[in-house]
Image 1 (cartoon, rainbow, N blue to C red):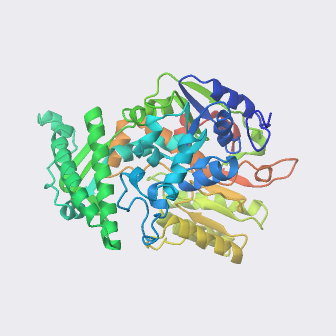
Image 2: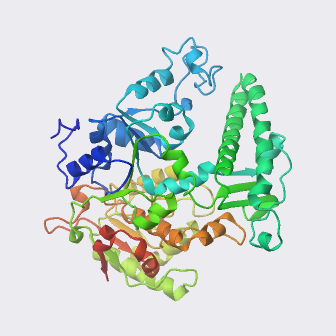
Image 3: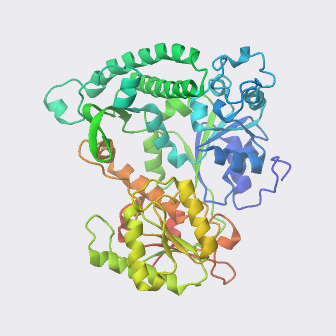
Length: 534
C-alpha cells in the first residue's frame, strides 16, 4: 500500500487510504474536513501517484515543512526568495533584475535558481505553491494540474477578499501622484439619496490610478540600480498589483463591495485620515475566478471547516462533494472542558471576570504542577488583566503575559521566542497571549485554555469591519467558530502524547467563556463530540 501511493509511510491511519482514493476518483469540487494528524498532506501526495497535482497553502513555512520535507513535493517560492545568477548582483533577486518580466531571455537562465526550480515544478507531478504565487503566476493556469489541492481552506475567504481589494493611504497617493481621493461614503443612505452606487464612483479612480502606476513602473524599473531604487520598485509593484486585482474584480463582479474614500476614509491609531478603501464584502464572487477556472478537479482541505453549509456559501460553492475523515482519537481522549463561567462579552462585569479567573486557576491547580500552558485572549490589555487576577489566586510565579502588552508592537515570532526563553527559565509557566491562537505548534505545553471566544472585531460605524459583520450574521458566527476550533487545537497536534490514552492524562484543554454557545451551530461534530461541561 505504501508503494501504491508513493508515500514515505503506509496509509494506515483511519480513513487515510479511503480519502486518497476519494481524491483520485473525484470529478469536480471536493471538500475534506480532517482533524490535525489525519494526514491531509498525504491525500495530495497519494493523489499525485496517479495524476498531476498542485497544492497551495498560505505560508512558505507550510510549503516547506508539510509538503517539501515530509512528502518530497517540489516547492517554489516567489522570485524574491532566490538570488540573482549574476555574480556582481548578489544583493538582487530575480524579481529585481533587469530581466524580471522576461526571465526566459536572461543569459544566465540555465543557472538562475528561480528559473531552474520553476522549470522543475512545471514538469513535476507534485508541486506546492503559496496562494499568492498561484494567483499571480500564469503557468499554473496555462498548464493546469488534474487536481488542485487548497490547504487550510478555512482561510481562503479572507485571502480572496484581501487579494481582490485595496486600501490606499494618503502617503502612497502622494508618492505616486495619484488623483485626489473621491468622496465616497459607504452608507445605506446613498440609496435613499439616489446617489450613484459606490462602485460606479470608485471605478473611474481605480482605472486612472492603475494607468498611472503602469506608467511609473517603466521608469522606476529602469532606475532600480541601488538598494533605495529597488525598494521603490517593490513598492511600485505592490501598489500596482493591488490596483490591478481590484480593477479586475470590480469589472467582473459589481455587487457586495465596501467602498469608502475621502478625507476621513481610513483610521490610523484612532485618528481619521485620508484614504481610499475598496474591498469585497464576501469571497463568493471572486473565489471561483481565482481558484476554480484551471484544474479539472479542486479539493479544499481543512481541520476546521465547521458548518459545511456556511463554509460553502461564503465561497459560492453549490455543486460539491463533502468527506469527513474520522478522528483516530476517541472523544474521551481529547476532551474539551466548557468551564462554568459567565459570557465574556462586552457586557461582562468585574465579578464575571473574577469568576472566570477563579475557574481557570482551579483548573490549572488541579493538574500536574510541572505542566506549562497557554491561555488565549483576544487583546493585549486582556493578557495583563487576566495575569493580575490569576496572580492574586496563587499563580503569581507561573503566569506570564506575552511581551508587548504595554502597548509596544512586537511581532508574533519575537513574542514566541520570548515565550520559549521564559519556558527555559520557568518550565511550568502559563503564558497568556493574544496572537498564538493560530499557526502555533504547542509541542511543550500541556494546558490550553481559551479565555475569550475570538469573535471578529465589530468595528466602528461605517468601517469595513462593521459592514462585513452586518453582511451575514451566520458567516460572522462561522468565522468565530473556526477561530475557536483553531485556538483549542494548539496543543493537540496529532501525536499520541497529546491525548489521554491508556488511562494516562496527558493534557487539559478548556473554554472559559460562556458565550461559546452562540457559535455551537457552526462548530464541527467532531469538536462537539469532545465538549464536556463542568
